[in-house]
Amino acid sequence: MFIRTPYLPEGKVTLAIAGFDVPGLTIIPPPEIASLPPAVSRHADLGLCPLGGNEVVCPPDTWAYYNRVLSPHGFSVIKGGQAIGVSYPADTAYNVVVAGDFALLNPAVCDKVLLRLLKDRYDILPIKQGYAKCSVAVAGKSSVITGDPGIFRAAEKAGLDALPVKNDGVELPPYKNGFFGGVCGLIAPDALAINGSLRHMPDGEKIKKFLEKQGVRPMELNSGPPFDTGSLIPLMTEG
Image (cartoon, rainbow, N blue to C red; front, side):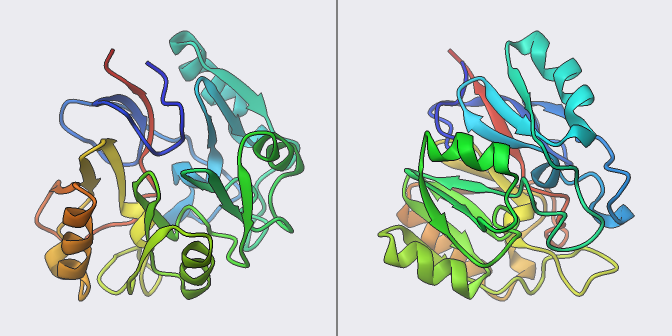
């Protein structure tokens, strides 16, 4: 069954795109984007944006790959108009997060094809941060966790239940740190898969309490520090 609202599965996820393995899930690894630095060249959230249902949008860079691996599952893979640039913000054209009824993005850098399609489906919540999905973990229909103060203020103003956190403890060498949104993703309405352990983050306990309030349990996949390989993008569920 296709997921109607991106990042918000209504059942147990069976198919996802991610840079890390999750027991019980079929994981499609992201392709390499040649224009990006090696550390982030295979981050799914930089090279694909789900619209909900069976539609996804990706840049010309990754279209052939995603069309080949996703069309057999019934997906319509839409080619965006903008290639991925080498550096910020040109690398963020598809880095959008949908949280409930809102699409959080920077309109100045979002691919125009993608932006037009999102406007038909969601209320656009404009933010300054280009790395919108990297910076946000969706924890429920109207709840998000973010390490970006600007996104936190915008989300809170829009009526979302938002938790501000520090990204300290999230690894992404050679950078100082990665983003919490890039280490995780919902794999069921009540389970957030995390590529590492929250005990390495100063705000780990705060995150756990927030998730508990949402009725979501953290599924820590290993005992090491959370490692940013790009967000897990759930695509299909049981049923």
